[in-house]
Amino acid sequence: MMDLTTLDLTAQADTGRTLDLVHPLTKDPLRDDNGAAITITLRGPWSRAWQQMLHERVDQDRHALLHPDAPRPSSAEEYNRTLDRLTALTVTWSGIAWHGATLDPTPENIRRVYDQFWWIRQQVDAFVADEEAFFGARSANSSTGTASGAGTSTPTAPSPADG
Image (cartoon, rainbow, N blue to C red; front, side, top):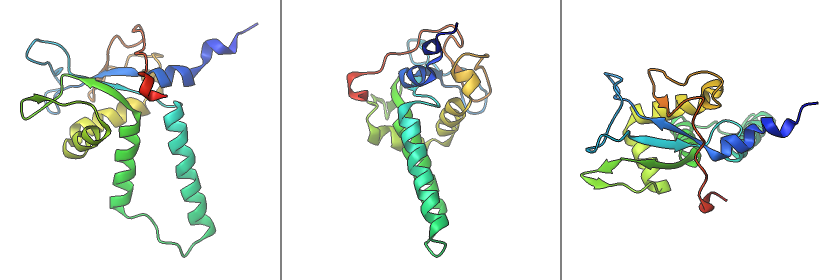
């Protein structure tokens, strides 16, 4: 007999995993002044947030199919959808500063960082899209970032605000 609750990937995805950011050119791990890794904790594929966005996207696509004369999303709208998705999947971060001051991970700040720094957005997008690495089925080490303790780390607990 197999207890399927041991494979509750939604619960694992809601909890999140930590991405260690790497330099966009050298791929060296980014560190703060104290030598601690610069990290972003992200909800993963199959999280409730991911599922909600997927349903919204399917509804939009269905509407477009049923109404062929309806305007199609522009590239700017598609870009904003990507920013919305990545912002919703971000739980928190550590070590990120803006003009010398610690930058709190509010939705506005998260979106601003992802909008301005394409290389961070690229690492975050690749990290959450790689299901096997996210869930620890194989190492998450890659040229786009690393999962802290990939495959062996204890997932990060969600904050009460994550609902």
